Length: 390
Ligand SMILES: [Zn+2]
Image 1 (tube, helix red, strand yellow):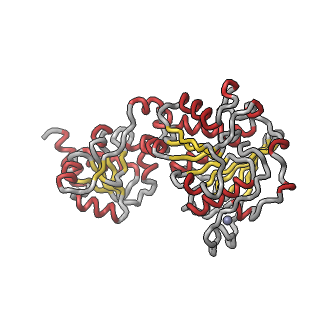
Image 2: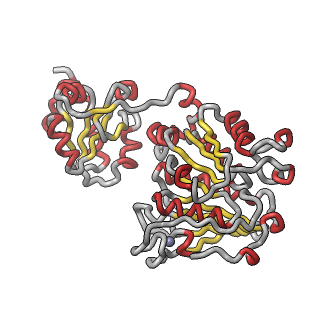
Image 3: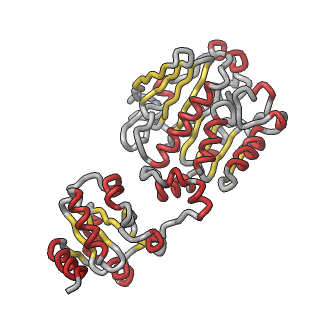
């Protein structure tokens, strides 16, 4: 008897085998189905909902996908042999309920069980996003998610510029930009998307040039308009996350109200002189309930109390820091990794070089996101600040 056959006989005695139909039933009851085949095999199809971990890095990656050693695990390959070896390795890692799928994916397919053909990155994308692909928190599946994501930036200004650059570089497939302004020389101290040669050009067109030069594989969708109650829902409806880079109260309230109504996360940032802050307003975040902007500030201040955007002044680098925090939060939300700034306000004092964090509590009686919230009617507050982008 060859060593291979002897080992197989030992494994068959030690690891219970299940049919593909039984594997699917186990999966429906909470078991993890772990596909250990090579990437080129998985590209031909893999059971719906399977963890596609491959064999090479299986031991290194499996605990990120299946953290609980008590969760039943069914390993599968193409014929049911490699999966037996893989199951034994998982046993050594501490998994207690292991099964191997007899007959593998070929039998799964022959029995007409549901499978899907996972989207793959092309060679250019593999090269471009190589540093993302190395991290299990992103990986190929995560990068595909980013590529299929749509993020809307409110303003191509001080906050929107750095956020847009890095989101484009990260491969967010569709970047929407709302801005009705043109590039002005006084913007260039902080709005790094734009350039001296493009003074007078619409900010949306200027942003498109900069972003497509950085990453031609993404799509920039421009909205050269002021956001108002009549267009906000139509513009927002196609996007997964809204990044608020506006610097005026009417827009902030409108962004909040539309995000609450449509259930979308509102990644919020603001800057003033040497101080900035960032948070995520998303009352419908599945893992914990956070506030909306109106839980904290139910109504905008009267126009005479708000600092004029043109007069307030800001250190040009500061929106860079805050805009990048917004970009990172956006990517975390899209990938569902880490702990987002939902219900947390991060403040940054540039002069003291000090970050601080405040808990933001939701108001259960908030008329917009609270327990007894009514249908949201949008308000066009008086535009008391001339510019819409910081
Ligand atoms: Zn609220």
